[in-house]
Image: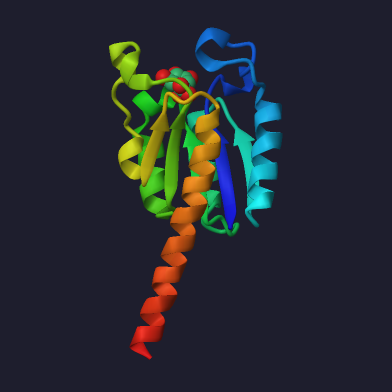
Length: 158
Ligand code: DQA
């Protein structure tokens, strides 16, 4: 499986940004760890981060043609505002899981609504950076189950 991890605005500052909320792990260390977890599950993880909404939309569209099987996305502040990211995820129809390091439902009321989660298979929030690893494992299982289901259907038909 080829999985694309997209991190949104300000997440390049992980490790130094409000560590009491987001922890002390840097984005580099997190990406390195997640790539090795993906490798141990016979998968490849491609990581990117952008502070720009349009760039995130472009990267999602690119996933259509670069062999991406699944997307893990933390849209960060765009979670609460971006219809464009929501629409991009729906347009490519690539199974996606949304991750939040903090529990967005337990914070400021403007963080309670996710514009992007309805375009995803599921969402993990509030488990710190460990949430990314849970999302990776869950997405690989989801994609594997879907593949098995499809090939079982094909066998039944023939
Ligand atoms: C976040 C939560 C968002 O509300 C916030 O704007 C972020 C990070 C999280 O991972 O907890 O930048 O997505």
